[in-house]
Image (cartoon, rainbow, N blue to C red; front, side, top):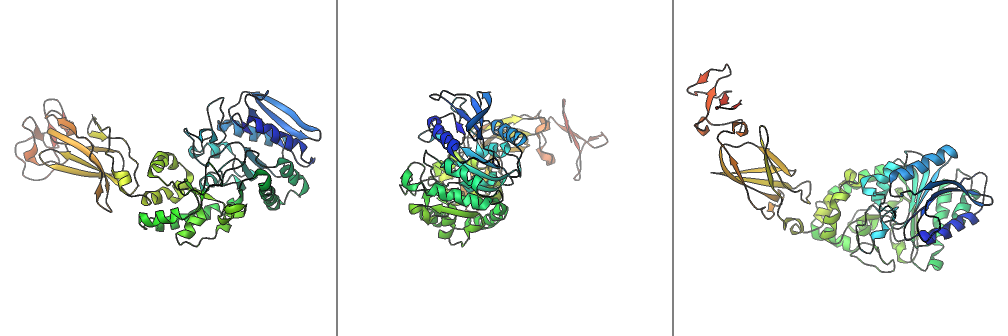
Length: 482
């Protein structure tokens, strides 16, 4: 329970619900909680549910729930101290899918955020995946907002059999733990699917009390890998569709509101995955991955699994580098579809910046700041001297050699599919002196040699006249170059 934040006070109610739940000597409920002021308990504490209530097992001092080691140590401690045939993990706290909130209204919603330490578990960095051992849990349940996303599921491949999460906002009261804990005591331990379905039903049954639309899903991770492979093929086809069509499908799709679940807002950044694919003409059955979903109000129109699809190019560009770190993007290249969903000018209206040149031992290196670009786009490098040379490179650097002279270098972003070029970078001047023969190109015409240089053949004899192509040693007073 990551309650070292605005959820500190509500955590006391959930602890009371756990305490009041049914007790069974066949079920161990171990709780690690971190709170902050105004709670009188501001250090980490581990409890176990007993017949008489919650029994304190261990005081941990100040802990940081935003550090993956904290979660990992709790899991290993619980497994070693209370071995069992079946394990489940409930992650309680704030959530905002895979994202790290950098500020604004949703700043406090980062997953497992710890206000005392100014930290959170960064899903996109793999910190959640790092904290959870492989193949241990029957299920992982998120009692937090917006954790029912395909990106989060992809980080948990191989970590559990099932994941239970909401694709939307979760009311501050969260799950009814008196009912949830009692389910594990009532059903036999091998009835995991039945227990999880009943947890979903118990949560959705609170709609009238919570007075808000709800959605909760059970995801079967046994089918995750095959589904990611299928999505990769679908996304490859989507990239061939024009941006206006892709954006039309997106605008027609169900979205999950980060601020108010009652408001349908197509500009929100999370869309229902299978609803979007249906709008785009792909008949994918969601039931292989979404084992069970239950929802109320208009959430019942959706599949119960979201995907990041920003409405504004600005939001996509701000999140792009973090998104590229996710397992989901590595496996499906969804970000390439997002490039296809926005007009080219959204990315080509800026020039490469911060050009620098360094002369190394035997080459010249030109670097510039990395731009937000599709993997199918190039940087085009122009080097102007007596003539102009052009190079196409995928990364934000180029190594090359030059004959003596003065040059100007500049860079653009280039789409070979449409021949679109961005604004040119400001030119950077470069001078290669006659003495810097280590920087000369390896292939030269004899007439291009500067007067200060002479040639040796490979035996070391001076060459007075070159009559055919060959390998020579270029030499001046200080240096040699083959």
